[in-house]
Length: 287
Ligand SMILES: [Zn+2]
Image (cartoon, rainbow, N blue to C red; front, side):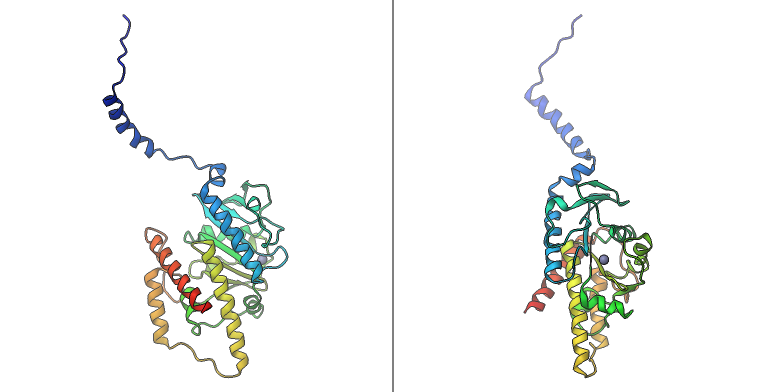
């Protein structure tokens, strides 16, 4: 007996689609290196990396092929700058995609050897979404003396950074070098690398670069202030406490605050607050 096939009515199609469409939405697209590398999000991040590289070079925070920039993308990948290129000359095709083990999975260039440093920070602190490493002269000068800039003197520095850490010297590009920052990455968004440079992490590439600017400006100002020959006058303790209260509320890292909240649902508001703070600070600095 032959089966009779009835054509599907319009009402039937609508009922079918009403059931199937939500099911389709539940399917998650598999994340592959090429899908991540070719995404519009990657395009935007590549532009941000290139703009940031140019800023670092124009501010003389990098020389030769020095410095590197990276950011997290997707669940398990990192966009990063390649080795052996001036940060002034980056183009979109220079940016590589690495997995969380440091293997290049998309892109034509070899990754920077200092990606190991970035990976240690990303693995240790999920709140780090972007990292800038460079060699700004004033901050690096502090690292040569085994010291960090003093806290309690410049309000913007207190709000955005607080006490910087100093990681001990190791040969750049090695696993031992990368591991030197591990004791500091939870409570410090800014780490001086002894006899080498600095590394800053934040929620975006732009914010991480701004931390470098704020650090370098603080180091320069402190050195100039010391040359005036009069004692430096600190911000009153009570006002520092107000800053720490604000940072505690916003979830900003600061070694003077006991424990920063873990990454989670409040990250969006933290990010917005950070953006606002950076914007107002940058405007004040340029005024
Ligand atoms: Zn370096």
